[in-house]
Length: 247
Image (tube, rainbow, N blue to C red; front, side, top):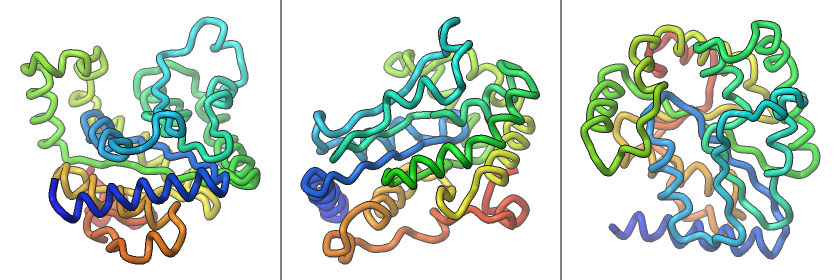
């Protein structure tokens, strides 16, 4: 681990100590293409953080009972209490992504989600929760390369899923779903931040720097370099057509 990485990890520990003292509540949402590097980025983020104050939430598909509930209901019990950091490895945005592409929910349910998600997130933010939403984007060639490595690496068998088989075939459908999701749910209170993640190291470094500037007190974030704007940038509609987000 290099000095720059050590400095970031120390700053993250200081950030959590400050949150434990102040009672700050933080939610970080990791979304992105299949194989975009969400798991690796989360591992880097949580490497030295407190297990007691940090929770990573990766929910399985909903049960029959959960399918009858208000859509956001299954996520609410996982929201943070004072001093806690909760990381969603995929989140309520499943309804705007995989459920759209794979037909796991109805068109009406998907439209309802796009209407309601900004209001749900507004309530979270207005309740005092700091909400950070990250979209990790990769190229089609890089995704194909990572899927092939995943299939052939015995240590990555737990990452292989049935959805991997259609990720490449449905690339255009996932692109369209992403575009709609980002456009409809990017708000001033709960904005999306995009990360170009073909280079895993650069992406992880940018994410850690961004989180420190978004969530750490100024005296901690002051000495942390800003993320590379060619790697990490706030979502805007122009990014869908100017090459910053993959087509």
